[in-house]
Amino acid sequence: MGLLDFSGKKPPKPIPVKWKGSAKGNPLRLLHVRTKKAGLDGVGGVFLIWHLGVQPNWVYIGAAEDVGDTIEEIKDNLEITDYERRGGLYMMWAPFKKEYWSGVVLFLRDELKPEVESCSVDFTIDEKAPLIPVLPPFLFKKQSLS
Image (cartoon, rainbow, N blue to C red; front, side):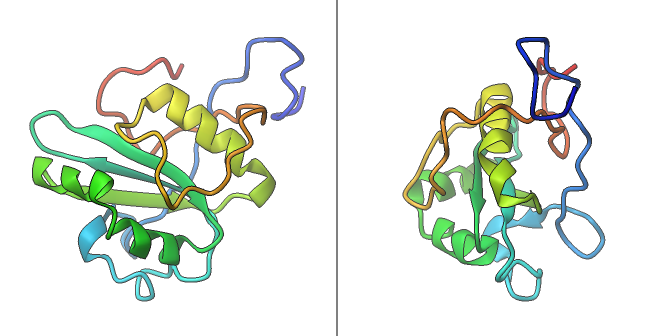
C-alpha cells in the first residue's frame, strides 16, 4: 500500500519529517525572521506557526510557493500576529512536492487544531485531497497521532 492510497484502510502511522528552521535546526521567531537570511525566499513547502507561553498551541498551518513572501505577509496579519503576546510566535517549514501540500496541510490541521483555520495568505487547499500523515516538529499536548 502506498502512502497516498489508503484504500479505505486505516492510514499508516505519520511519517517523520525533517522540519527546517534556523541553521542550527531551531524554530524561527516569526516576527524577527529575516526570510532571505533564513533561506525561505523562493522556496515552496508547508509551514507551521505556534505560540509558546502558559498554554502553548498551534496558531496556523499553511503552504506556499514562496514561503518567504508568505511569511512576510503573515507578519502583517493581525489575526495571526495577535498571538505573539501569548509567549512569542515561532515557525518551522518543510519542503514537499506541491501535489502533496493539500494532503499534508489537511492532515496537520485536522490533528493539531490550529487557532486560525485559514487566512488571506492561504494557498488554495484541495479539500478532497487524500490526507498525508506526517509528524509535526513536536507536540504540545497528547494528540491522536499514533
